[in-house]
Length: 605
Image 1: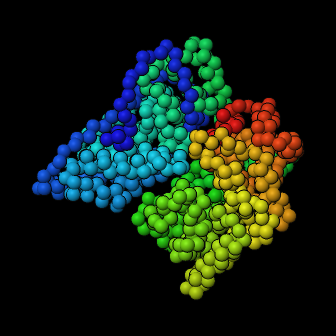
Image 2: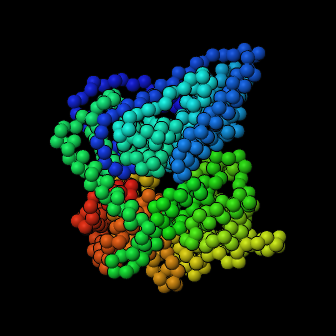
Image 3: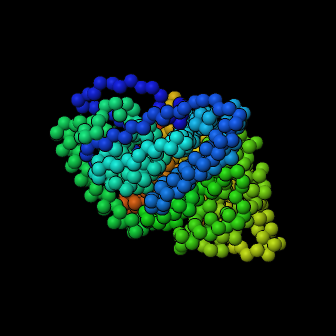
């Protein structure tokens, strides 16, 4: 099995006395400790053809193994605190129940005469192959979730167990990759840091490491062949550096860095309950981006003032039936009650492109999905699903300050059609005499250049606007950030981007409509002054970024931010703007602060 095995054949290179390699800073922190190597790169898959009288027995073995695997995952999930990491386990449970996967495995057993292990390996390899070709890194990395459920099924089928990972407390775990079960054990045993050969910022290991606050570096190729258990290792998960067998001087230097980083974290966390107010009295609302209600615990813990972007499309993924109006209502109601008294902004489902959904099969196989049937366009095509979501949100708005946000609006006609659908949902509830909120603030995402250019027109029809920088930058600069050939052109401080941001902010000021910003640019501390100087007073970011941004803003004056923007305006190039910002921010703030929010822009590196 190729994908489910997690790795192909490899050659062991001779050990080096000192080994240094860079990877991705997946979960921030600095730690020096002893390595504990976990290597599970090979899973043996027995392959045999079964006779006709054995077929039903093989199907039964597969079903029993699936049930046992589901129970195991439920037990692991129960050992973890609430958060996005538990949602990863829930997603793997959904994958195990996926009727398409189940049917494919059973078809391979019944029609091809494969034994259960062989059928599982073939089916999951096919899924991994499809995911590996996805344009978005988040979806490419989901193949590793499939890999882990395949491994769990295979070991369960053979009545094998990988054994508990029992690293000593305070060690650094070095692995090719780690399963959610392994990560639960990392949490139980109090490991000090993690390093994996594969994965990135959005891999399941990175997500769980951040949630469990374990420093981690991912994507360090060739590491396992150069380290053995007991080696002294430096993990600098602020800059993404791993050093195996450092010199005595290096180890001392990084131990000092580790102490300084812990002091920095303590200071930032102590202020998490304070408002983000500048030294000269300007308040900046820091809200959270969340995908599911499980993420709300993290948002509240990190001091977010509500939710600026609730990605409701994740409710639709990994399921065979669409969510009902009642399901939308219950989920939104729970979110509003959890975040009270702060608002929750529900973005209507943003499916298509990099978030394909089996419920809407006609939206697949487009030549250019990023510019195809996606987001609001898809919602307007799928009227019944869209109206069910809107009715649920309008009902839930009785329980707290809800806001509804329409994604990927490109024209006034499109906006008016979306607003008409909201009115239609309200009329349906009135006709059915179902209780709902009379008025719910409605806004739009500004994420295509056409919307930014006519922001002064669109703003007259909405209650708020939110700038989605990820798509806005890519559409404006005509580059795919996930394409290694052109991602160097992804430049948040490009003059064209700054002009569009200014146009949207000025339209909001002119018509007294609030403008917020979400996307990775908002979470990067290097850009905070620029965004504030342009007039933005509301940021929506991943929950872990909130304390860092709050700390930075509280040490800032608005005059400083506006002065920086005036300096940036003088340069005609992105490189010039980046140089100004980097010099100023690094002079004023410690390196830990500028990297502590998990900044992922090219300039941050």
